[in-house]
Image 1 (tube, rainbow, N blue to C red):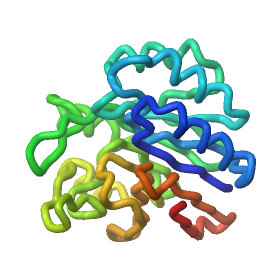
Image 2: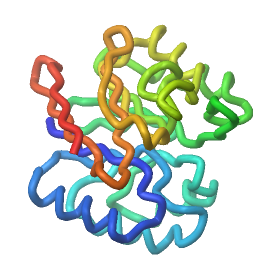
Image 3: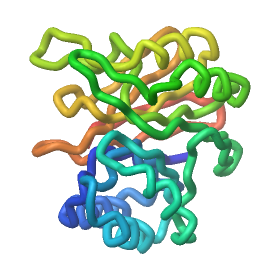
Length: 212
């Protein structure tokens, strides 16, 4: 399976065009969008552009996606929301959490994060791909090159549930991949010099990652 993972589109049409062009070249089986699809406004326009890409799209919301985006997903046949859902592509289950509240040098999924995470845990299996907007705290989440700024709750989930792969964004300064225990964490934030990540998974669940 080939996954094309992106995050932090921030409502920019030029980023959607880049995703579309890369999709034609890379031929992924699925596109995963790890939040910040929109930039507070213009939700319908950006979702329509994303929906037109001829590959299944799985998505969660980030901190610049208003809650109404979750309701808008249902009007776009090629976009599947992942919030507290399991969607299987081929034999690979994808599960996700929508939302993100940035606070100084930290992040939360939502105000009732503990309850939401308890709902998520039973959905995660050893071969799952977990998708959320913020990375787990301590992994690919440094700002100003030194301060960790992401979500402790996701770190706890990964250590407990040990999914095969986690896809995130949010921290624009730290696109890349790194292991947290047995879980490969990929920050696929799109920035000035980055266009997401290509993740290849073979039939033995071996993973290779290229940051674009």
